[in-house]
Structure formats: C-alpha cells, structure tokens
Image (cartoon, rainbow, N blue to C red):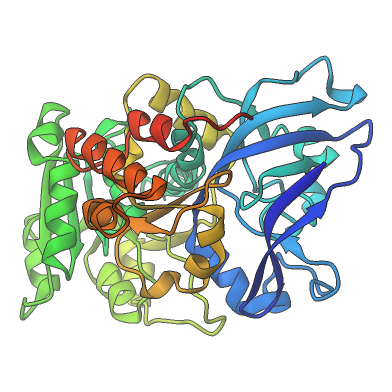
Length: 425
C-alpha cells in the first residue's frame, strides 16, 4: 500500500513524500492515520536531526516519519494480534514505548510509523508495550490531543511530597494545596489548567502566569474562574511582565508561605528561578518544558533544599496509564482540550509548519493527513474564505468559519466532520 508522509532526513530537512509500504508481518498492524497534532518536540527532533536522542544516527539514509500525537483507524491486523485488534477499530497511540529500555518512539525513530502520514505500520513493540489503545469517540482530533494531555497528567502524578522524618514520597500534587503554573497560557498550559480544575486531586488555589495579555485572556475564556470555583478551585490569571517584584506578589497570594506545587511550562532561566523562589516548605517544582539546549541550566536555592525540603522533578511525556486517564476523562466530558487548537491544516502544510513552529503564534496546530489545506488560524478562516471565494477550498473555509464561530471560536466535532466530508478511510 502507498502512503504519503513527512519524513526527517537530517537537521531541518523534512520532506513530504509518497512511497510504498512493505506488506505487514504477522506481528504488525497496518493503520490509517486521520489526525495528528504537531508537538514542539517534533520541531526539536527536526532541528537536531541525528543529534536528538530519539532520532537514529543513520536517518540521512533511512528517514523516519515524524509526528507522535495521532489518531486513526486500523486497516489490517497481523496474525499475532488478531485476538486483540480488528480492522475498523479506532485507536490512539502512546509513543513513549520504553521498549527494553530503548528511547525509540513512533514519530522520531521509525521508518514506517509516525503521525504525519496517511498509512503506517505499527511494529510489534507498540502492541507488546500495550501502547496501541482503543479509542471510542466519533472525533479523531480528541484522540490526537490525548497524547499531549497524557504528558500533562504525567506531570501532575510525578510531583511528590514528604512528611518530616518520613522517607516516603507521597505522589501527586497536594490536594487542597497551592499550585502555580508559570508561563501557563500556551497550549500545554491550557490543558494543565483544565486538568487541575477537573481532576480528582485538585488544589484550592491555582495561579497561572504569563507575560502576554492576549494569551491570558484566551485562557480565562476557555477555563473560566467561575468554572474553577464550581470545582472548589480559586483560579487566578496573572501577568507578571510589568510587575516590579513578581516573586513577592506571587508569594503574597499564599500569605507568604509559598506554593506546594509549581509547574514551569517554558524552558527559560528566569522562569525556572522564579519557580524556585516561590516554593514553600516541601515545595515541588516540576520542570515540564523540555529545552533544546543540552547545556540549559538555572540557579536553584540549595539552602532551601537542605532546610526547607524543596525539590525538583522533570517529566518528559506521559505513560500508558496517563493516556488512559486522559481518554477516560474526555469520554466523560470532564476534559475538553478543544481550546488547545488554534490552527488547522492538511498534510501538505505539515513540514513547513513544523520547521516554523517556534515563530507561529497560537497554540496547537492540527493536521488532517488525508486533506490538502494550508495551515490556517481558526480566526483567519473568514479571510481565507474571501480570498479563495469561488473555489472548493474557499467554500470549505467559509463552512469551517461558520461552524467554529457557532462553537465559540473553537475547533469542534462538527468542524472535523466538515473537513473530512467525502473522504473514505
């Protein structure tokens, strides 16, 4: 079967190509990818090439398919897995396989599986690790967002706290405690706010900081202060850009005690140091945002480590249980990650968008792999419709604009149905 895919050949070398997939082996599965959301991690892999820990050294000669936040439908199942999977089943994938200690992962390391493709072959280890997960939802894009949401869930589970004199880690954020998400109005921050407000282990105070009023305003519209209050959480959005002493202000919100849990959502030295400075006793700082610079470092107060029991954790991706939790919460309408998406496009826009990701404003960029469409901000659909008036694509943009406006400016199941109309999988 032929597939069309975006493949990585080396540093900043992404190519959209059509090629033949080999016949599947008895322990493999052929699948159709429908949606894939673009992660900053894909940009990091593209910018580093074979220097990236997950990208093979011989990628120049054996290119890999990028994309790891994907959802689709199974097409053919090898004999080994026919008792567990069948053609027509929808799926999502947990790319963090951790197979026999290897860092290899779909979207970084494999020639025949990645999200930026029309059809892929799941290697045996994906199923062996329990990372091909059933997905029971009409909308594929929610499945694509299950992976980034699982990373967020994993971060909350990875935090830990201790009791004086007891050498046992109590895992998770402090229930009913104080929590801050620094640089938290970006796409992943939006998911983190949503989860903190709706999970079963909620803080009593959640403070979200950023340095951009527009991002904060949008975040406050998506997860409102009123919605948080209904769930027993006092939610505050704070712009620290113009504050003379943001650390003093943030600590004042906790009566000077400092925060139990602090998440750093940008790999920026001053933000990390600010997070350290607002920790309370036994406070846990979660360095969530992965840097591209392997020498990235920041100051950390080790006096407080010794006398105040402050500590730091880092998480890179979620595990399979985290993804299952994300899917379950979405299926129960406890989480709605739609607000994470600000741009939508087709596979033909994926390579260019991935390489330019740090310079494109907005949050998540969603790709429909069987669609040809420029990556476009939802707020620009109307302008695109006017620009392309009289064409089939112009009609599509006009329809999508009307649907998304009806949904409060958000991508939604109805918009997905329109963009996929007439496409057979």
